[in-house]
Image (tube, rainbow, N blue to C red):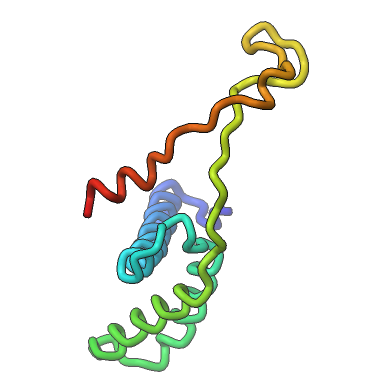
Length: 129
């Protein structure tokens, strides 16, 4: 919810939200990249909570203290790595619906044995390494 009343302040508030979102996603990416984990395993909610706590504690340090900023960032990454989500199973469902509609086919018994997609993620990771 935006609290600002004037258009200029609404724009400023939106930019602030976007910058915070980018910082949290950067924290998630750095945690996953540094540990060699899949980025899908890093929880956005956990990263948001860690960032909120870090900002509250950050008021104790002067802004020109770069070592404190770096140590706060490393501590946030370490906390995030301790809270990884479990490995997700691969999902494969054909794009059909259970009730009749003109755009999609009706779900039939043959859809239960629909072929799984190839393991794209593992082949992409091998290409990068």
